[in-house]
Image (cartoon, rainbow, N blue to C red; front, side, top):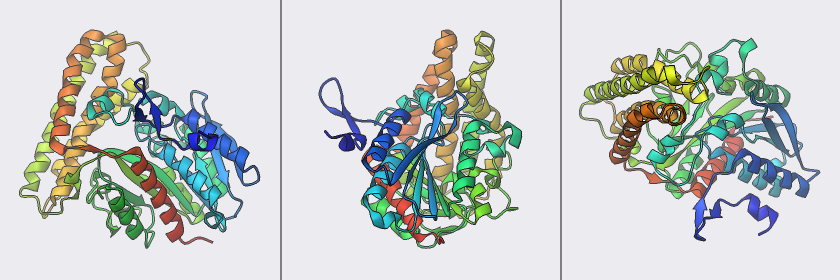
Length: 428
């Protein structure tokens, strides 16, 4: 196998000689980018634009020299690894096609959170249980894109400063942030509408057998410009979740607006579920939302009890797993209150399913991260928590009947959607 083919491989042989799908780790993305630069030294450049809190380098790969720029960000959330292979494929595709870079230079942040990528240990295809037993996602104040919504400018993490620094330098007309969800369907969030994006997005999803999520919980109440494309609300618009401190206007997604650009956030699922596509009216949406809120409170209390018992036995200060678990547990009760106040008239089955999935995943994530910490530092508490992680993962699976989306499909869908967003976004 040539170096080029190896850089774009999505499988590795296991001990028995069969092949297993695998997400590349950040160091592999850097090696693939280095190989691309060696093949196209006049076209491509790779440079370090910062370091993480733990001292890991943040790399930016550039392809082309046009003044109009697109910035593609991968790895902003540690538990959403599909962006890594997508930026690798995009860079290869742009380097091979002069038409894609005739008027646009492309810039790829290979991994926005390499510290987080080290802690989330994703296997493919695995199961929801295995996913949660290996789960990590930092609390909001430690996330590169969301930290400006949580902390003042002088406390921003270096990953955020590197990202905003790249935006200030490049002034792109479009930023594409590659994200994902554990279970559900695909959708796009845009800070400003991109007319014409919905059609190629939906076509790609259909060809790759990825459902389009009709009512994602991330975009409740937002304007829709086409199937699966949701426009973030204007400044000053109320939020359906007042308890959540995240304000998209303070995120790095809106940072680009000072240069007249816009951001598209492309979401793709690890596991697909057709429940999130059902547009038939739900028979009793108010009762369903109350049930989801009750489940969220009950599961949160169960995990909190374990954490309270274990805290005296954990080393201090709290590590990233414990910090993130506590953040979810502290946020969830008020979020459950928000859900009981949501309007439910004429709600679809897809909307209720999206909210239910949201409510199931939050305490599961907290429990999974805490289980990893307790297994190391207080096994008796881990013994109490492990059956909850197992049972809740099983219930989640039974309820939503997920099917694994092949890595090839995840990567190709993000690649196609990014190219379509760049094509349809007005630029100089």
